[in-house]
Image 1: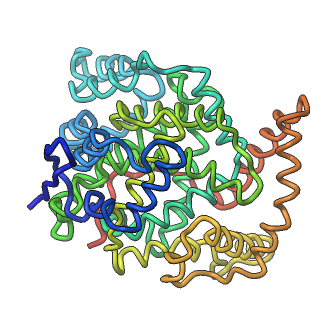
Image 2: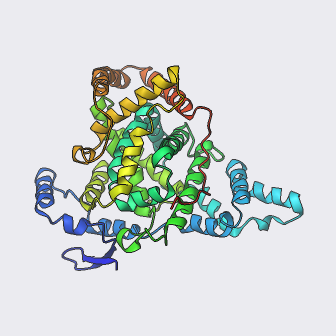
Length: 435
């Protein structure tokens, strides 16, 4: 049964998955001392206010009802037809689907399923709080990070694979496990690339918006298959791919990586991080996340991060092990690779293994079979002063920011194409669970 915990002096209650141990852990001596130290230094708590924490815990039981209705009523009965309608609506608007249906068989425009109209009504309405300038500034940060976004996000994500609430849906779907790990990771890279192209999130019909919607539908499809599966326990973990964990994914692309990338020489300013949070908030809206309580300040984002760190139960077991170890292994040279392709794979395997040393908790990393650190970490260290000098020039020399972004974007595109080796990302929502 779902646990109910008192939140504190107000003596109210909130619904909490039993494996999400925040309310118990924050009172343990180590975390309590850390909270007191932060209060003395900053005057505020290490953790978010209780009402924010309660709302987050409740969000772990919620999904995306608008997109779920679309999947249930439109996608599941006819996946191929629904995907065709979805692609047309993303390119030309939902009314284009109406016109096409009308021309095809005389069906009136109202034949577009109501669930699809509701989905696009939400998707195509820009909330009043969106600041286009901030959205574009945030997207520019991702572009400037180039392939380092892939490395830092990949390493940070491994930390959460210790949690069954995160690992179980991914393990059941199989996309990030074993031989499929590189393919699915590259799909995620495609998502990062598409959504951060100039104007991508704000321009109707853009590839970035289309990719966001396809990922949204894919999440719902996986959620529907996992919920009710014998290996999924809602009282322990809440709803699969819940609102709460999707919000954490957004944070995993903003404040945390911005701070982590300082370890390799990439310096992201406070203003840039705030713009990145706004960019992520709007991206979350497009993905069907309720972003009403999404952090808008660096401090609030770190408080939520601390809350989740305190809540970890490390209960993913072998499912988590497979996911963690599959990530760096997926870059290793494959049978049949020769010449430049093999050298490139050897480099990617080594360098991504080295990055996990920087972006994973050492205690977590030590539990798994990971690639050797040397000599690859020496390359990371050697580049640090060069990247630091480049960052200083970017902030002080006119014209340099544009050059830095151009080079980073060109490099990430070349890297992605080389890894895909002629394949295309499809964001398939039809795959069956592997067990």
